[in-house]
Length: 126
View 1 (cartoon, helix red, strand yellow):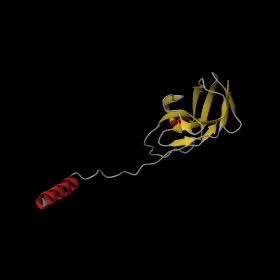
View 2 (cartoon, one colour):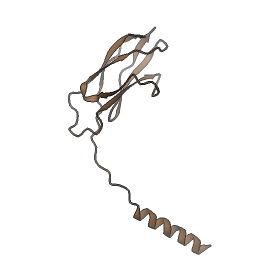
View 3 (cartoon, one colour):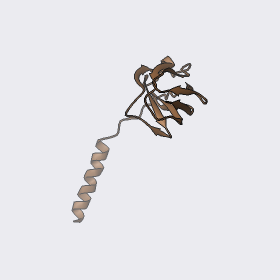
């Protein structure tokens, strides 16, 4: 039994030393702040709006410039129904259509590219 355990751990040691992890490469994280909608904003279901963010200083080596916009309600992110996707995150704006959701004042826009960034709480009315 002892030789089995010794052989087992020796094999694991060899495997983990031969299959070395790939070196990590430093990446710039780009998380531009959402400007609109902001606090006090009210949207109506079915209307169109430009979600805007500050895109003035993107890092030179941004690893992902493809953006996705999600709606968050009461801290719950709706990843199943993105408001927009596949746009250039360095553009600073993207038009979306306000989805059919329940009225409320705990909505936030979440902008994803390199990283996620939540905007201020705003209201959606029927």
